[in-house]
Amino acid sequence: MAQSNKERQRTRMWEYFIDAATDVVLEQGIEQMTIRKVADLAGYTSSTAYNYFNDLSQLKFYAALRFTKPYSDELPIYLKKGQNTLEKWLYAWECFCKHSFQSPHIYATLFIDNIGGSAQTLLDQYYTIFPNDLSNVPDEIRSLLTEESFAKRSEQFIEPAVDEGFVEARDIQKLADLTFMVWTGTMMTFINNRRNWTKYDATNHTLKSVRELVLQFTHAHMREHIQYRSPNLA
Image 1: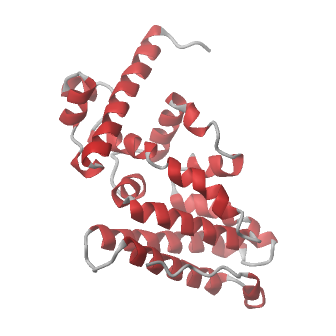
Image 2 (image 1 turned 90 degrees about the vertical axis):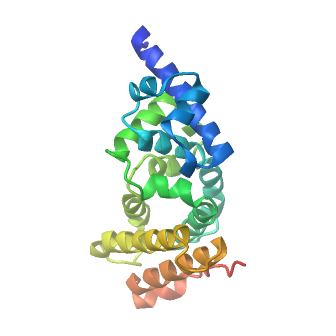
C-alpha cells in the first residue's frame, strides 16, 4: 500500500534525524549525543525532534542499530565454524563479544539502557523505515536481529540442541538468561571501569563463563561433542 503524504513526510523526518544522530555518534560518540546536537545537525529545532521521537533514548537506540552491521555481516562466518547447535551458539557469542566490547556504549544502548518503552516496537518501526538494512541478511540471522530480547534470541537459537540430545527443554530459558546476565555484568563492569580490563579481557571473561555454563547444562555424555574453545585474546 502506498504511503500517504503524511506518512512520507514522517519517514523523511525520521531519516533526517536518524542520519544526523548517526553522524553525532561518529564524530563524538553515542554517550555525547543530545537532542539539540542532533536537531542542529539535521537543520531543525529540538522541539521538532520531539514531534517524532519521545526522548533522546529512542534516537540513541535507532542510531545504535546503524552500528551493528559489522556484527551481523560477520556472524554467518562464525556460525559456519560450529558442528552442532551449541558450538554454533558459542561461536555466535564469540562474534557478539568481539563487536560489543569493541563498541560497548553502542551495545549497552541496545541491550541494557532504559529506552523509555518497548524495544520491540522501536525495532519494528526502524526496520519498517529502513528495510534495506535487512536486505542481505540470511533468514536465520534476520529472525535473531528483529527480536528485541537478547535472551529470547538465545532461546530461539539453541532450541534445536534439545532434539540433538545436548540439553533438556526445561533448561533452555535458564541457560539463555544466565549467559545474558554474564554478558550484562561484564559489560557494566567494563564500561564503568570497575576492573582494569581491556576489551580482550572482557571478551575472554565472558566467553569462558558462557562456555562453562553451556557445559554445565549439557548432558555429561554429550560434552565431548562440544569442541569449541574460547580464544585467548590479548
